[in-house]
Length: 394
Image (tube, rainbow, N blue to C red; front, side):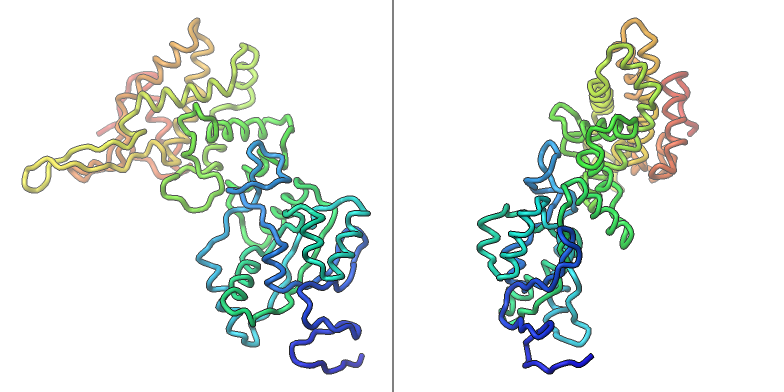
């Protein structure tokens, strides 16, 4: 095969010069399914869309129309920008995968016609602003755009793979698959996407548990409202992720207990909210992270805010497992609500402080490990106290 030299800044394919084009269609690889293209950062800024969890996606079937990707890690973008602007031999642009949200063949043909003509405004006018959804490469895309913003002379044609015919659920699944294989996504983001999108309407126990956890995290009357990390991204103000709440809810509501509650005519979501509301009220000091006082080295009383374990994963998981027992006991009592309240009331005696700062000793109530690894020990401690009044040793 012979090659022909071209002027600097010119890219050609089969003799067709692409110099100066903001977008270019390089070829249709599979009719109505896949095409190969190239776009400048300036064109990307005009056309590409990212389906982020914290923002609205017009295609989303979720109740609040959220997207399925976690928010971009903003600290990564300047590094990618500077990498491209170095213009070193290794500063290559790698393909960005885009889902073109069209399924009708006539619409796909029209899109390709406009794209091949470089008609960016035509695409924007004829199609929805989210028609070109970035499925893989959001940080590279944002890094390219920021590099162009910083240096307008930086205007390479970056390779883009265009995929057609995916509905929102298939697109979210595609995103999960390619990103899970490359780099493990936060389990919380995967599970919340299943709850809201991929398995919406599936009548399985697993999906029912997801919906209970989703309800607890979002319902305005839930004590968990606004306190659950739904995407798994680091957030010190939300120590419990959706995945932690989902796994905890699974141990709280095994399929057998769900069946009994439904047979008794109980609203499972209401029972879940009621249980956690009772926990929050009974253990209000820990739940609300209230301050305590201790004696300092001068003998003076000084305030401090303890590290409570009630909202750490080990606390949530243990309380959820105990919730299964308490709800079961309540079902076998003439007054369901009063029995629940009575059993949960015993937890008022539990000290949720991780370490007693007064004497710097481990609190015997909280002697278990962190996370799900400590669930068994803390659950046994709580169960022993609630059901037969046995306090932990020490």
